[in-house]
Length: 106
Image (cartoon, rainbow, N blue to C red; front, side, top):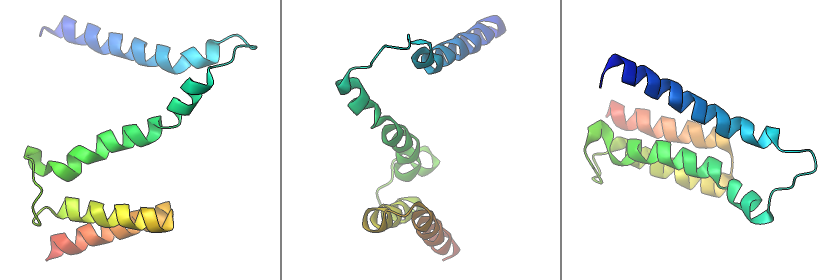
């Protein structure tokens, strides 16, 4: 890919990203989004977070690893359990990072 094509691609992706983010603010004042769309939009943060975290847990170093030697996966499972039981974000982060650091120290 040439430098010009790369720059145009980056600019194009920036324009698309901006257009998506600003589109809801440009709706007319009386416009209402369908209830089905509003219900679907509630799942976007969880889907994005999962898409970011899952590859790091399942593929550390770029190779798929479901073994007990995968510290990130084990720490992630502990964090998921803590989040499920407590619904406390700070406690979840502390538990996940604490387990990860402890496993890496061993």
